[in-house]
Image 1 (cartoon, rainbow, N blue to C red):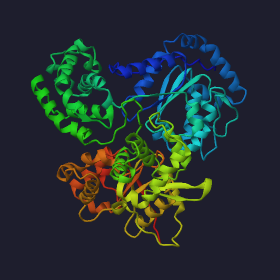
Image 2 (image 1 turned 180 degrees about the vertical axis):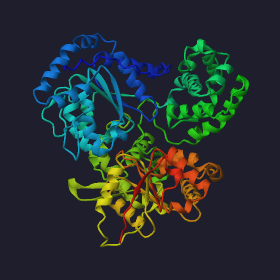
Image 3 (image 1 turned 135 degrees about the vertical axis):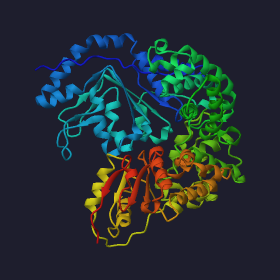
Image 4 (image 1 turned 60 degrees about the vertical axis):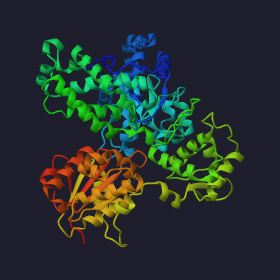
Length: 631
């Protein structure tokens, strides 16, 4: 039976609202011009600024281009050419698996930060049968998309090893890939790879960066007030459309299903749009007075929370009043007081400084540099760039050349000579901000422990792993089993009766997997999980004296959530692991509810519970991992 030709189908992608900000409009024009030529792009910009919507705008412009229409017309012939090439190398069964995976003309998005490093190559390039235990033939994303766009979001999170493996794929002159254990190279000249990152260019291999395409940059929303004004009613309307009490909402607006055709179109109804526009005008000033580190993502979350928290809408007046009241609570939760923000990311000349992956650390390092009189001769803009560079490299060593190359990214830093860089580094060494190792060309520099203690939120005091004795019995089989378990779930409850060595096992597992994960261990006591929240709040207050401890403790799971990045650090894009031991001490209903809520809200961390048995309340969110007896 012959395989039917897959349809050439353009994806229906929503690119959000049309920007109003003048610079963003120019950016959209620039991206549109690249799209009409099929030119790949790399989008720089902070989290939540709209990088994926810009990528979607690229795709929506691309599919209107003349050459894309030619791709559509030539697809049957191209498909036959591809089929014949694969048929010469693969069995009928393997060939059919590949042909069934083909998607022509589509837009496919994948977040690089969510790909497990051990699976990333297989997901992107594919693999052959039996290259792993029980592996079946699986084509990769790069191989399956034809005449379409693959959007790699957060590409800076990919490991340097995988970046190296992608070099041939993204090189426009070569554009080839091969499955793991593959029999042939396949062409990638008929796929456009566009990418985005919130990290500085230095986090990528230099050869990788230069092959990714034209780089463009989208600003944070703090610099785009016109876009914020347009986004507010858009988000209000969308949030109203997400409510599930359709009858009550349509009655409130005086609508019927025939007026809106379907409940999915509720946000597009004229009365809803008019309400959203009027309310948006009233609350815009309150929103523009705040700084939004999470950009549109945080703003949308604040507005959605305020809309969806309303229990039962009666009429538009009461709905509007409740919404305003809720916003007074949620706007401060997802934003910051602009007056307290000291870090300047942009000079008037327009030389924007991309924050590092650790923006709070950027700010604290800059504060320390600004305090030091010996560094007053360094221009303010250069100090800001230096703070971001040090923050980006706080976990690793760097060379003078690394700093010099970073400086060259900014036109406002006029002096980038070797002598100038040496002068800056020597100043930091004299102040014991930097230490060094090696000699000559092999000299490497690093932030000193004493300086890190001053600027970096350190969780080791309350989240330190238990010590291990030497000559412990081998538990490699169970360690390997839990490793595989974590590839399929991020919520695990390790169970075993007393005396089975649960704590020793998790400490052994953590030591074995420390190159892959950052582990944070907390042993619950009779005080329950509330004591952990109290310890976390004290830790946060030590670095943020203005935080209100009482307010945080009223709803600790939700109120601590915005600060998780300060507490638990990811490792090369892999989520950190929070381990809660002695969970059976947390037997009261409130404590159990807190853990369940934590599991559902704190999606940025992997959670492992340690207990004698798994409480029924955990069964929906956690997967049980049972230990064998241990001597």
